[in-house]
Length: 206
Image 1 (cartoon, rainbow, N blue to C red):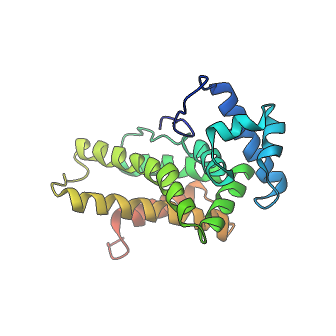
Image 2: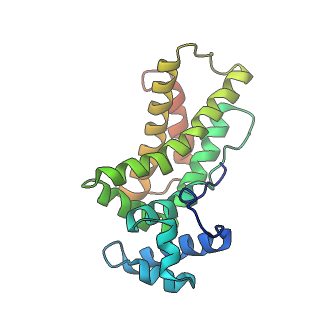
């Protein structure tokens, strides 16, 4: 998916894409080394080689900065065209697991999810910056499968939206739990089995 700017543009000097990238990378580095509680915008600014005021022109605080740093990692996800719905799902799930295996992704995602349990505004930002953006992959995959004749078209917009939510929750929930909670590998064998259950359902004949 296409990367998006970390925050809405503000009046003043033009944004520097290089500075944005350096700040987000420094944020992820600091999360791995320091954790959420010890991370400060001053430390991030030093690591990124920018003035602290540069951060505050872009982000109002640590919550926004960390969510955008994590969101940038997941913007690397793309839906490969591997010829079938099952193969496409397997491809994107393997990508997702590979991102979650990176220390900066694990540290960042765990940190923001933990903080979001007591911060409604942070939860809303996670939903907008990470969840809603990545749901685009579900929409793309479903549209491609419908064009291939693998899935029937959905004419009810509300039902269609519920289906997208459910698919995203099933995929993201399973992979996050497997990698970050259970600490088990998401390898090709597991991904094939998961994809079969996702597409056929538990009650389908073998």
